[in-house]
Length: 254
Image (cartoon, rainbow, N blue to C red; front, side, top):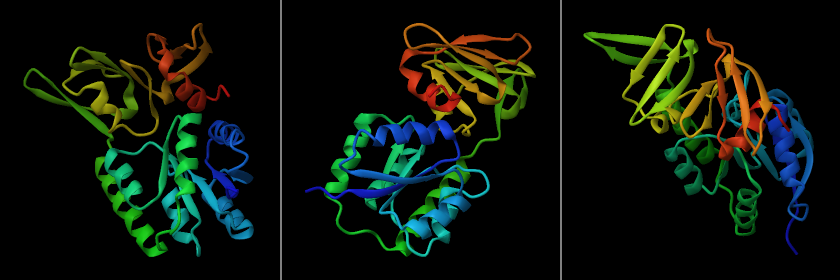
């Protein structure tokens, strides 16, 4: 008989908590969701009171990150991260028998988690665990972008990311749409996606937009969405079908 794990879901975004809760309900023989938490302080209280076997943990949370939460705990349960981290981080998690789910999470990926749990025997010590997390955090901080540079004639122009409404693929380059105007960058959409902060969302094979500029979003046919931006042109962008799950989670369509 398989073990049933008491589980707490921790994420600051309600749609993400609900989406994951609905997914875990498809695996009642493995996960017994006993509670959810919307921030690190609430999560710490519930973990210490309920002593869950597993926590599904978001990393980027305001006030207290997932890493800071783990550093506060006397006993660390098994951790399954729900985040969007670079390849180095994923390899580090894998090496230390820590599972990770890259948002948007799908049922097929939860099935792999279930299989991994069946073969899970020995947890890493808390000291080793926190050492790995600290190294990951340091590497991520080194890669955090706040601006992007473009060359125009003999000048180098620095564009603050907060002024960028969206990035648009242009062959092997990328067009930057910003309050300063439109510029061409030698960066590709794929490389930018790995560097941009969490308020940027890829909604199409060739579009990454700044969520802070979203004015409204409405459902369209064939699992697509029309997103209107609060820029000078009130730009309308139609999302790609394969990005529908990510949009549902990030924009609250669940």
